[in-house]
Image (tube, rainbow, N blue to C red):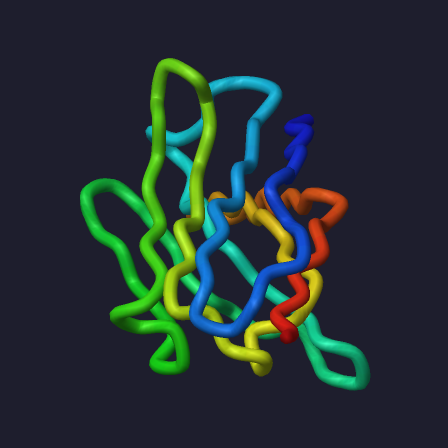
Length: 118
């Protein structure tokens, strides 16, 4: 079992920045894909960014503005969000996912609210 705890959300003006953190209860980064998702009111949860091995990937809507990174010794994954827009407003969730040939392990944090508004 893996627990994920997010922090760093809040209220920010358009154009501002926030850094989200997700601490894992044990170091799983070597095997798991770590990702960030978000869900705005009335919308489905959508993928934002992921890091696996040495590779990072981003949704087109955040590419060039958001950066995902990991701190192995601290078992923490970050999402640096710059040039924030009102449409980035959502609850942001941390995800850890591992797929083997026959099994899948999928863990979620409780979410942290990000509100972009003037």
